[in-house]
Image (tube, rainbow, N blue to C red; front, side, top):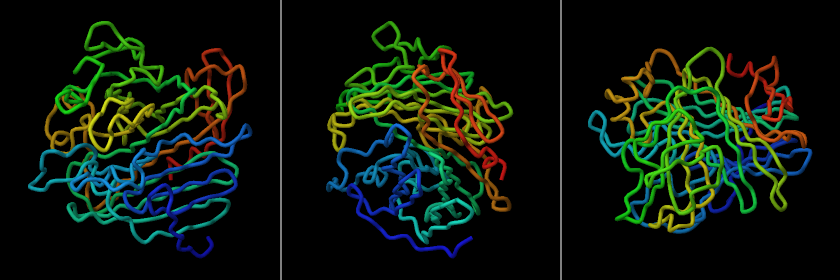
Length: 386
């Protein structure tokens, strides 16, 4: 390994950020909150930038705005995950935890054997413990290898990744997921019309088919297509089947003007990240700082949590935990907990219509299309074993 180098801070779309780059990827990570975006993947068909950056970037926000909203962009790690509106063990946690809004420190760039990594650390003030964030790039690969090591924490904890995908005008996505056993719309209203927030899906509705999710007004909506339901915000959860191997999420993104066609995918260990939250954000929040401007954004959030409610609700018995779905993991200061997560961009051929499933090879994933076409994409799957 070469001697670690302290990265230079850049002002990137209104946030002080560290740059991480190699021959295939240029990524920026915000100092406050550790938000990963913008990210540019250099593909054979041109650059791809899949992640959203909030439209108020760099603007002065009102006092009391949750810290997570100031840099809001891309993917970020949440501990504890959720709104955290209720205190846990006498302490009130901020929205999505200090990891998503506080200042990360001791950043360094490490290079070794074709790997370039940014490493940074956070010691929360409200929870005794330490988080080490490591984001790796591999030479020639359009993949992001993300690892968070949790040490010194004790007791139940909710946490997760919060990826935000942006679909510019003219682009659409077809969504697919590894097998899941329980699908449900948020059991409490996700928005309040009296405050200027609107939902389209039926609160608390359970479903077995993502193509037929109940609407509040009757009928159903197909959640395998996005963007959809303009003017609304909706949240649904898919509980992964906790079998051996990895779970995945995928978005096959159509070509729009100036945008190459590609597949964005994410891989996880479902025994660590038990569920997938889908946040459909398409202009349904008409209050600051959203003001109807946050549109065509999809949150694909790999979590262990009771929906978006926070640590108190996740740690106590709840309807999901009663079904056997983990909504927290028990952390111990004696043994660190490692949360591994990989995101990538692949560019299949013209016969590839949409992801039907993802298979795993020795050092690759095989994207299988509904049309029957396949595409092999290199991924170092031993990352999940190290």
